[in-house]
Length: 352
Image (cartoon, rainbow, N blue to C red; front, side, top):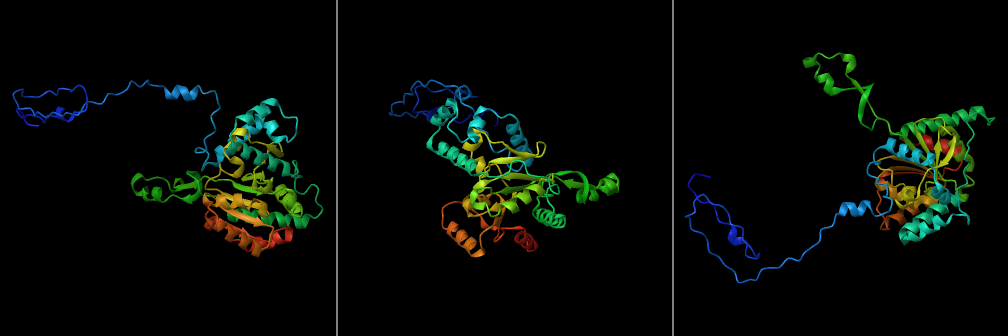
């Protein structure tokens, strides 16, 4: 603004307040706009300020775990689950023990939950009641006399996992798997060694979920062999999922399936795969868990090895399309009629 000019008077705009703030001017002799209004000023009530942060922190309740930091990060998910399994408290024991001997604290906790949260807890406990998995799967080759057939099955399973694996999808890390195009282009400037122009990508684990409910008793032999073979792989997350609800997780150190979910996890729908996002999930089961599997195609890629026939699978998919549940069948690969070892090996030959 040039010297000697008068700025615009703005106090005339403040016609609804009791007091007008007088603006300073460079030249006091400048004419001032005289605008008055007959509208009575609005009296602002005395509002007592409340410290919201202290209110939340002193509410007395336990903060529910946020799922944002676990999405797209399988390492955080595994770390969280292992920490829960190692620090099992009384509430987790009552959650996994479906009996009348639960403590009064557990029933008091259930009374504090709303209807939606209590329904999720009951849904999880129903899955625990349906679980019929062998908590200590035998290692492959120890108790099986059909050595040649077991090796063929192991090779077929490893090929199927390699086709579906989430390799090379994470962040760029130091390694020797791929050529780094940017570093190759900069070699003419920085004279970097050719052997340093390579990198790798962070690998994510494959999720394998096995339905251990009584309705899958005919497929129990197949699923037990899959569980026994998957214990050899370090890049596979193995879960016991009766009717597609996560109940137990396989711990490689303890060599057994362990409890790993807390009450807060159940309220956050972790047993219905809410912690998984942008992951490849292999689910073995019948149609009792198809709603959970179909709903999670919105954020994950699901390979559904179903024990039912192809016509029934198509009918279920067409009915689910008419529901209001969000889904994305482009991320669904339906493999029907997988109920024994032979049908599984035939299905893996057609897997792309």
